[in-house]
Amino acid sequence: MQLAAALAALAALAATPALADCSVGLSTPGVLKLSPSDSTVLSSQAGTASVVVVTNLSNLLGTTVTLSSPVLDTWPAGFAAGSAVVEERYSASWLLGSSSVPTYASGPRSFAVPLAAVVTLVLDNRVTAPGGFRQGGYSTKTSISCS
Amino acid sequence: MGKLACLAGGLWLAAGPALAATDVVFTGTVSDTCTLAVPTPGIMTLSGDGKTLGSDQTLGVPATVTVVSLGSNSVTLAAPTLTDAPSGYAGGETVQMSYSGLASHAYTSQQQSFALGILPLTNLIINMQVLNPNGFVQGTYKAKTVLTCS
Image (cartoon, rainbow over all chains, first blue to last red; front, side, top):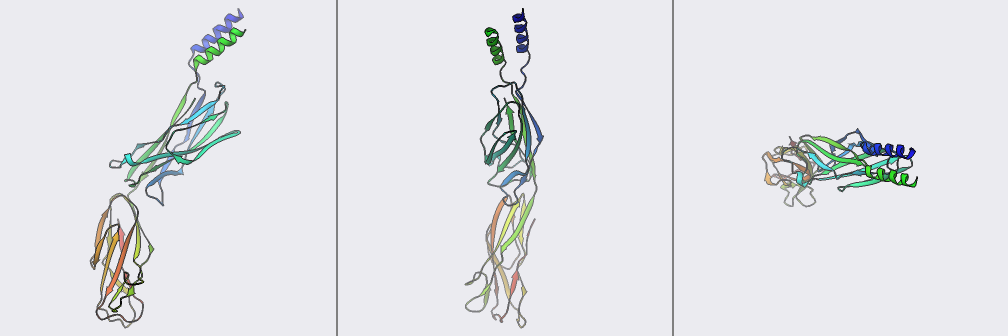
């Protein structure tokens, strides 16, 4: 009888949607600004983005946080977006641990986080355009996921 | 009891890890601007025949102007003028400028201008010369052109 009850409970759990092993929340969006010393560089040094990742107890193997390759999302007409290079760097910390890549690069990145951790992630984006930037609005995007 | 544990593990694996994600967006605006700076002012020296005071004479130094432009701008170089001369100098000179680098023009006394688009930090080299068939008296001379970018 006890076995049957336990099986029923497990079956019920399996039938419910899976709880996320973690959650990702954006605290502060980033701000891009033209470098005062180099008009070919638009970077977030004036306003980094901040993200909080919370992992829970459901994934016993720990959680992996992944940062996608950054992309140029919007730009003004006439800007040669194809020649622009978009890069990112990050610094993450949690209780008793940290991970960071202080050098700008284009590729995706990931790092492991232990269970039940609150991770504060600070992210920078940078766009380099050899021909400079045309007047107008620009935006870049990095997708952050955890699983 | 062992079977129960295996079944629990199996169901847990079947549920699989769930993924959470968000997009982090960075935004910024680039405004139409143009900046000029003169890191190296020019120095004029006297020619061998004493009738030309110029920055392209021996030991002379051309002026270097740095230009950064975002958007559609134009640079104007005003007609060059002699702004300072020692007392006793009788005048009668012709002041000319030439430039190269970012754009180029041979020696002229006329105002010049040229268009700029998107331009990273770039040098404009300006030479200045004062011509006087009567020569120059001893003292300090200054000549200038006014650059504007807008």
